[in-house]
Image 1: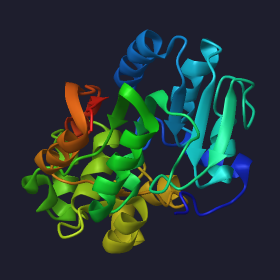
Image 2: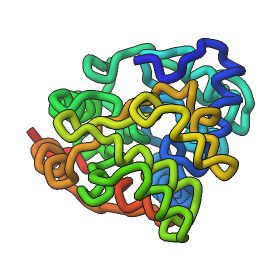
Image 3: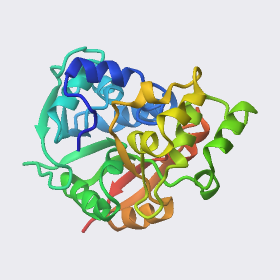
Length: 272
């Protein structure tokens, strides 16, 4: 898929910088969790990052650890490189492999795969294939750190724009980060489990979104972000994941209310 509605590396990078704190970028507690486990699991081991998440790449760059970045969009991976500490499309410790996550294959299995929202980029019917592919990439007892978005509660979906506006005005929604997520939640498509920035702009409309200015200029901030997320109920995700992995740990970031729907799973490969 096209993650961004522009192909310029520097333009993508400058737009992506706008999203700090929002749901497409890891928050500090998530990064701390990544750092802890990557440090303990990655030493002397072969590692893969799905996509080009700059915050995860920074962890590997700081420790000078080799890592393979896998994505079907080389432009996106290179653009994210400008936001890393190395400030270049690919750092010396990185190599890029242009592959679709649903058909990905490597010559040798690896010990650690990290995916930040990667699974959310495929459709619900493709979740089993995605997880089976990651299972195949991993060595015996390899680890998959899987950060994903899950379906928000129905009461957050079954609202109107006016409800969200009132909740923000009265302080029930405490930050623009949660405000942006709540606007996405009311545009959640229950049959497909999908939501995304363009979907929200289209369904609510630019005029109605303008009422949240100046605190949140939703259209200006997200108009070039084409990320679309498939966010299934957490129990359904776990039922599929447990066919391939043992769930060793579930971590919840805590900076914002929306983090309740963004668990990080530490998954260990089951033996086939």
